Image (cartoon, rainbow, N blue to C red; front, side):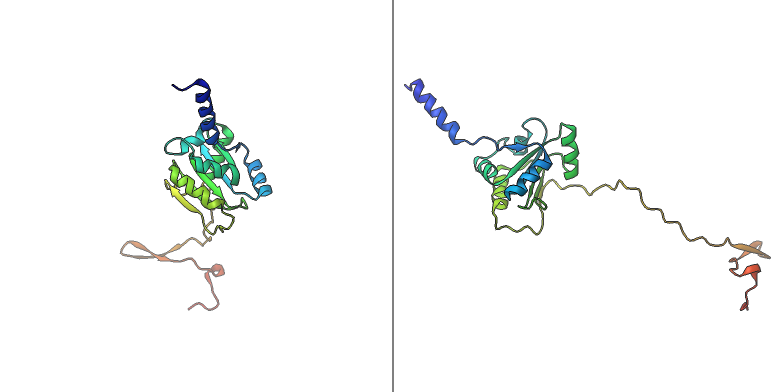
Amino acid sequence: MVSISTLAALVTLVTAAAPTAPSFQSSYARAVALAGEQHKPVAVFIGAGEAGYANLIADGTLPVEATKTLQSQYVCLYVDTTTATGKELAGEFRMSKGLVISDRTGGVQAFRHNGTITAAELTTSVRTFADPGVVVNTTIQTGTPIAAPVTTQAPVYTPAPVMAAPVYSGSIMNSYPVYRPASSCPNGRCPNAR
């Protein structure tokens, strides 16, 4: 039979071994500022609800290895789309649920995943972009394809050049007026008219 003190020691050991969720910033500006100060990439988790970041992972939990990497190598930001500010920021990222990882400068998106991500893909991605030797030349995009942006700006109207209205002569051929373009000469008299 296991004593209560042995059971308590086991519970303490297990909970000490499992890392807690990373510390999430709630302000985008603060997260980017911290990333710049600490020379770390930003991991932006976009989800819904108080702990919606966990709902991004297919099985609902942050993997232990990914959590450790996020805690030590990243500035993490959670965007809660149930708030007005979160919904607006998610719209700027053009996704309602997903993960965006920046490079170490915080100015370039290195990785974008729209929708739910597997634990293995999350772990691989955070490990890859935590490496200081990784140079980001292009954004890796996975997950559900993002629709083309919708243009909300009105099209620019460019009027057609103004031209003189055509005139019809008095001659009639087969009951139809004969079309002759309007003359650009004053009074219809051009100096070189033939």
